Length: 151
Image (cartoon, rainbow, N blue to C red; front, top):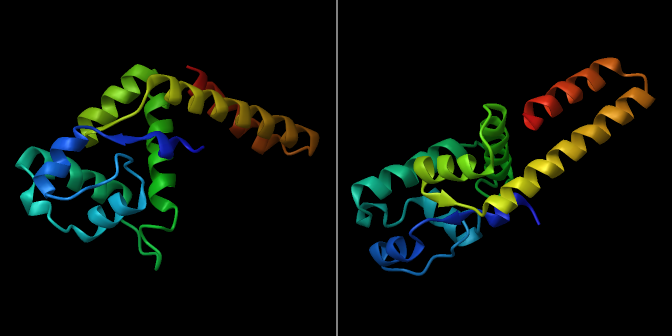
């Protein structure tokens, strides 16, 4: 299961009540992405919530693909966002706090830790394969990325 399947809307019930419609708890679920992409009912949200929702849409749903928001780019952008937070030295709890403050999203710290651990293991595999293939540049880049994530 991808980390984006474990990212949830904070204050989900309150937002659903303001929108006067049912929405999934998952931030990257189809109905949620539809709502964000089309902007239906956004005027019903209080100003602070609307600002966070629009920030999320602008940062992750801004794509020129024909299949947007189902092209996979929103999830890729969010994963990049998580990795950048980790590269800045934030741990799982601080990453959850950052996504909550910026976008009104939450995840469980254990899920974020598992995601980061998996990313490090993948980079170790890339580094090893690159060395076997004699691609020192790819091995060096994987090693540096792994060190950034390892803290």
